[in-house]
Image (cartoon, rainbow, N blue to C red; front, side, top):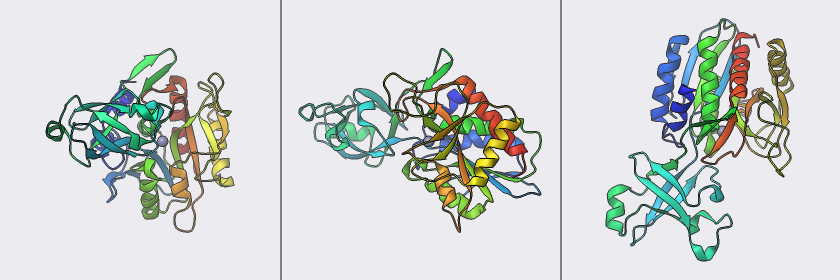
Length: 326
Ligand code: ZN
């Protein structure tokens, strides 16, 4: 779990993925033919093979906040970067790249019921614009503070979305024994802003098939919205979300890999959400795509929760996909 801790605690909001990219690059380089970074910032670990092109994508970015305005009394206004849920931010800490800490709160008269971000602010613990400007500038970004902790059979931290996927893809690369396909393991950027990195990477690679490895919400907490995934029951094979509908060939490949390696899995169909599979799917004249999901509670909060067995089984499934001819 040490690597997952390092990955989750790295500052890496959408568009600022440079730090985590260096960590991942060092980890995967020994296991592939070459590693390169494209103009968008995607990290592409490429392994030569004689078969068709398989793209596996895990996104490196996390949701965050960007400074838009500093008030005379030192309070900082912000815009959200990705799908921030206001209720998950109130009276919680965020951290800037330079280590500056802020507490997010809301205009009291507006009420605390999931306020609009423009009625929220960051308190940097200073009392004037001059002091605040010494700490942060317009355009600077912050992320949730969410230390990594083990808890029962689970772990909790910020940014498990999608450092879980990055972790599983790294583990699969480290442990794979054969590679019949031409493999492109892509650690993508800006997924949280609309699958941006996956789109440009898929355009350049033009894979025959592509899969995202990402987290997905569960339906296993008290009185929650219905969803098929539960923690601890294995990775989800996602049939649909707002970004794509599964291609029959991609579905068959995922099922074949899970069954052949005896990996527990759960079928999943979601009414909302999106993954890099959606970006890959709509590239060029269309690419069969699917998603492997790590079941996750409290998605897009500073305290996301995933099960350790699910992590292991997701890495095993990704490895099996690398080792299976598409
Ligand atoms: Zn994600």
